Image (cartoon, rainbow, N blue to C red; front, side):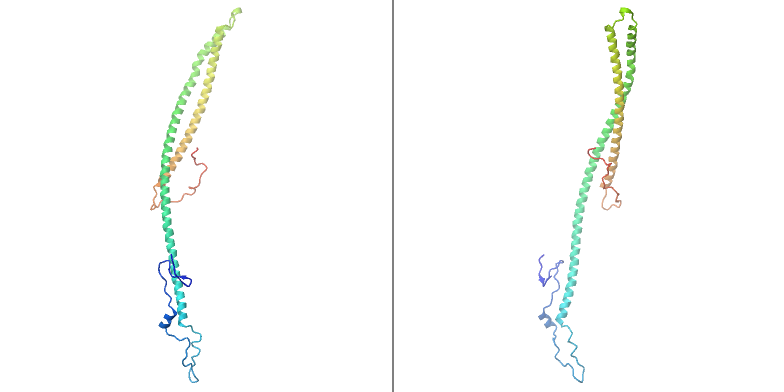
Length: 263
């Protein structure tokens, strides 16, 4: 803002008003006639002397100058207060614009976050159902595996009994022929099959345990996302005129137990 100055004082104020003008000496001398020194009768022996009445008094231009200085200081003070008020109004407007922009951005991010929550909740539900189906299937296969060894007991008993009977041969008839070799091979195959079934049953038990643990973790993750979804849905529905807004301690602090995108 361009300003003109009187001495060192600007003549254009923040309120776009001009300060009161200072009267010149010529104007004051014509408006207020005065004498710098009283030259009339200053008293005599018979009357009261007046020589001391005007010796210490100020002249009218000095009074006008002092009055104008105080007047201008008051005007400058009022103008400074007006400037502070204008600056405060500008800060209020800027803060309001910034707050509205931040609020709109937060609302947009909350909407995107809710969309992500719904997506991952659906994904978790699908994974939980898949784990349940897989666990049920493994349990069914485990039951079949537990019944399978019983079906090998009869062939094993027959092969073992045949070998025992062949061991009862006497003399030169006690020979290890092809039949013996096949019976021994059959017993070995049945024993290996039973060992494999036992290992498979043990692995099935371990897989069922792992599936149930993973299912528990997925359900906990789903519960956390559901709770966060409800909280964010509540926050997304808040408006400036609502009275139910309050501060939750620690809500902005990152917790160590919170899930991460990697987990």
